[in-house]
Picture: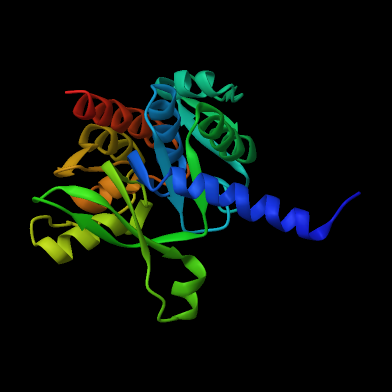
Length: 252
């Protein structure tokens, strides 16, 4: 027999189990776009407790719309290994460019991150950070609906050993740290130049404040790099690189 109150208990109870387990994590990733999902996948696969917070309803960031709502994206050859790891198909266009179904890419990256063990929370906004002894110690979170409604409702906190800003063009976590510590400055994202941007984003993926790492378009916002449009190889490679950086830092 199906019982409505049993459904309510099941949803609320199991969600609270997941949330309470994630109050303390090894790594908190903010943003569920391509670089954040790839980072979550590789970190969770390597045995780290990973919590990912996405302020929107869906994950995948800018993948879903492809280029100008044509739901295909391009990935260059040096990022195909990541697609192979995730079991995501692609089609060769020429010796440099490969075409991927945007829907498969967004859903495939999300699926693999979850199956690797990452705890993903959507509709949660990061509104502040915790800092102890000049080092990132956690995040201050609230429901996205609270922010949208401009309600005066106090947030709650989660603790972690490292934070990854994967919030894309906004670099929202870095902006908070810059504003509140004065020890980080953001140059701001620049014009379109796909080739330069794809290389520079991966190259500059890094730790920008003790315990705070940047990946994806957040890298462009911090370092003043160009944007690249609907080519996603750099996003995937940046996500894998930041996972390696965090792994090395936490296991040092």
